[in-house]
Length: 172
Image (cartoon, rainbow, N blue to C red; front, side, top):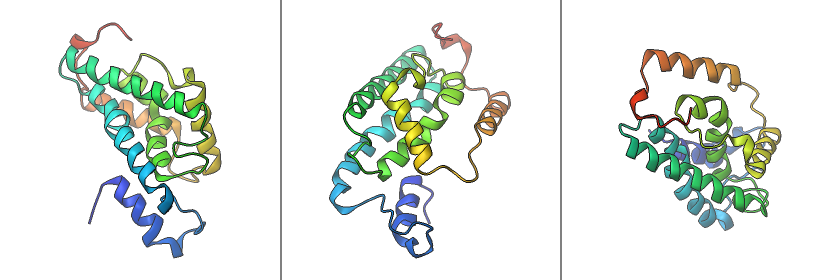
């Protein structure tokens, strides 16, 4: 049993393909495996986990390191998407799905709650277009409601205090 989202997506992509609505969709084609791994080595620690390191930073220094890494990585991805439809070229892959899960929550949740406030995602034209593209390619039928994301994350904010205002450097 595994609760790592990357491994779970890979399992569903290959292990349960006969049950899928679109069994021809392969998010980890063998010829792109290396590129997918390379992007996931960037996206997971620097963006997906990076936003949490911002939100849970225990010092101004830790926050500064985390927020600078998140936004320098978003800048890198923005540049890359200027000449590529998806992270690995012209085909949607697991790397895109892994980045999508953070991007869809970025402006309504991480920008506000986790103080990832240097820029909003809408200020990145390529990243924002990429987000809209993936959302239209495979729109979630259930389970994704931006209002629900906002409400749930902000309820959690009041139940479990995220950091303290003492380390905020005025980005709010």
